[in-house]
Image (cartoon, rainbow, N blue to C red; front, side):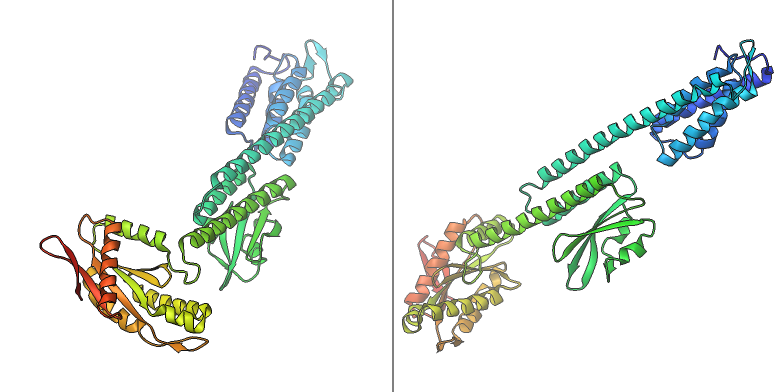
Length: 445
C-alpha cells in the first residue's frame, strides 16, 4: 500500500487501485476461510491485479500481486478454474504495465523483455504450488480414508445386529462422500420382489427402498451422475459407485473395501445366529432347549404378569422306539414338537427338555387348565410314521407361578404335578397345589 501513487495516474485512479488491492486481499482471505474459490473470481482477480498494479509507483510490482493471488488461490477451485485464473493473471501483469508504462522515471513497454521475462517465474510458482498442494491433499485424503475404514472395521467387530452393521456402513460411506464430493454409493439388494435400493450415500435419502427393474435404472434416476461402476458382492447384493466426473481408482477401492467389510460383518452375524441357534435349540425338533427355556421362564417371572408352566412327558414312548426303531421315534418327537408349538402360538413358548420330556410356558395362567386338557387330547391323536401309525399319550403337570417364585421352584412344582399324572394313570393332566399346612400335593385339574 505505501507504494501506491503512480505519477501517470490521477488521485482518483490511485484510490481505485487501493480498493482493488484491498479487494484482492479480501478474496484471498475468504477463499482460505471457506476453502473454496467461486467461479466468478476467475475474471475478477486478474482485473484487480491489473487495476491495482497500474496504481503502483513501479507497475512491475503487479507481478507480486499476481504471484501472491495466483499461488494462494491455486489451492482452491477446479483444474479448469486454476488454469484460467493463471493464464489471465499472467496477462494481467503486463496489462498493468501497459496501463501505467511509467516505472520510477523510466518508460516501459508491456512487451519489454524485462517484463515478459518474469512471467515464467509466475507460471513456475503456480505449478509448483498446485502440484505440492494436490499431493498433500491426496496424502491427507488417503490417510482419512484409511482411518474411516479402520474405524468402520472396529465398529463392526463382534456386532451381531445386521441393522447396526448396515448403519455403520452407511455413515462411513457418507464420510467418504464428504471427502470426495461428487461421488455416490448405492447398495442394491434382491429379494422375492426383485431389486431395491437398500442403502445409499451422496444421493437423496428418498431413493431408499425404490424398486428397480434393472441396475441401469439408476442412471435414469440420477442423470447428474455421469460415470457408473457396478460391482456384485453376492448373488443378492450389488454395489453401484457413481460420480459427476470419473471416480478416482483409490476412491473406488475405498468403497469396494467398505462394501466387503459390511458383507463380511453380515456373514459373521449369520454365523453367530446359527451358532446361537444350535447352542440353544434342540437339534431334532428345533424347539428351545432346557437352558434357553429356563432363561425364558426366569425372564417371564421377573416381569409384572403371572405365568404358568406345563411339564409334558410322553407316555409309552419307549415302546415306539423298541418296536419301530429310533428313526420312528425321531419322527414321533418332531410331530409332537409341532403340536406343542401350535398350542404355544400366541400363548407362550414351547421347549424340549430332552428325551420325551417337553414344556410349555403360558403367559395367561387362567388358560392353563384348558390348554393342558386340549393339549393332552391332541397329543393322544394317532401319528402316522413312515414305519407305522402309532398312538401315544402324555402326562401333563401344571404349575401356576406365585409372586416371588423362582424358575427352579416353578419347574419342580410342574415336575411333581406331571409325576402325579403318571401315577394316577397317565394320559391326563394334574395341577400343582399347596395344602394349608404347607405340605405340597398335586390335585387333579
